[in-house]
View 1 (cartoon, rainbow, N blue to C red):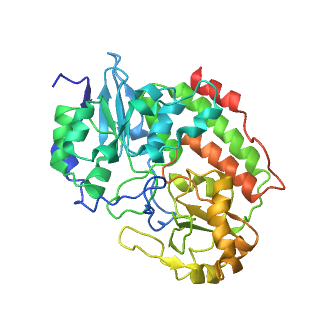
View 2 (cartoon, helix red, strand yellow):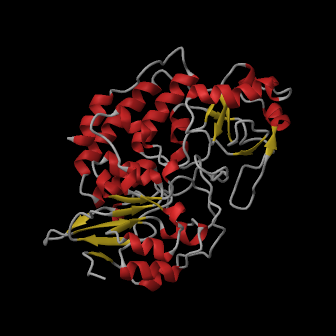
View 3 (cartoon, rainbow, N blue to C red):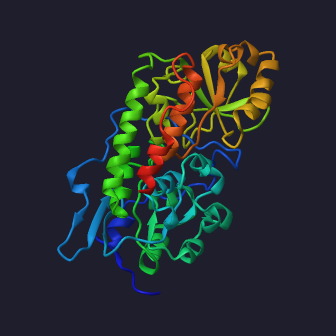
Length: 390
């Protein structure tokens, strides 16, 4: 193997101490598999990682380093050109920073939801050039064959969800590239006992990796303006909502989530002040150890005003209405749920989400939840595209 220009600081033994065994590879998803992936909500006191010790540093020689929990500091002599990604939210960050060509892989292409880029002139991501890791099989050999400059992946995700070991991670660092990343889409895995990052904290780290800090700042400023404008017309108490997984066209049982839980994929719900109809009930939300299911009788008891159903992002709104919603409206029990009676049943959004996808999803939910206040485009596509492509 050729010598890498990317060197991870710290010993392999220190990294190995962070690993917490292996779990089943049944990780699930929201587009091409029919299994849920979320777990129960964590307390709002969860520690985030925004300390100055994690900041990017630059040496006199022009090299630079980026530090991120749990992998520690990684030193770069130049910007990595080939980056292996598992979670599509990180791929979306690279697209937002103008580095879509660097994406060597994603966990599963069906969960990337790159169709939103069609609305942004000059922004795209060539999925034909990306390896689908689930399709290839998550293994030492698959990851080694990618031969990337960086694994933008939380190694603990690989060792706890798939059948990789800490020794596999050490081997890949020695033979291929360092790891940098944190599992941010949820905050409920028992093995994730280290700092979490918000969507934008992780986004900032990725901007340091590809040396696009100015573009990140411009994107964040744009995001702040869009979210603030939307928030000005959002009621302080939004509707009582339930978030569930029900991937079939005629679902009769669901995996419940805590809509109020932390994690990057809950950001749009929080931005729009949606209240959680499940969190304060006796219903146990889906967790790493609890594969709970609920039926329409339980949903009727909860009686949410709005129902979000994950597992249908590949459908158009019309396709969702003529399959899932239509089935519920014809169902004896489901038809009595307030959300179903009023037609307020919507696709629940992607499991893995990045900054571009978040803006589109927040717009979608805002127009669905508050049609009296919002309609049409809620942000300027041309302005956003210029930030990404300039």
